Image (tube, one colour):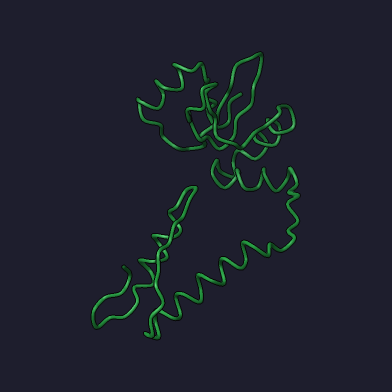
Length: 147
């Protein structure tokens, strides 16, 4: 319930709740005559209409766009390293899953070399538990600036 007595709709709370959904978002609502309730209901209906009537979107993103996005996480000083890595390896930016479907990690990017997955997490400091999990699955960590 995202309405507070004497404060009206708690829009920021509703926004946070809706944007944190990872795969499924379920909303329950009922129509009532309150102006804020009608406004929220209309916004939700508009969103549902967008899901039904999907606009055509150009999903082609260039390799350079991907490099620029990752560069924000590794630092401009590593541009040449990142460009070289991107051109020499078959890079994936998807999460890494085990064969059984378990999520292993969500690195900035990863690639497979001689049957071994190499994953780069940028400047993120991994917990010891995360490092151990990667090691258990045979995933090698690529440090920024190093191959």
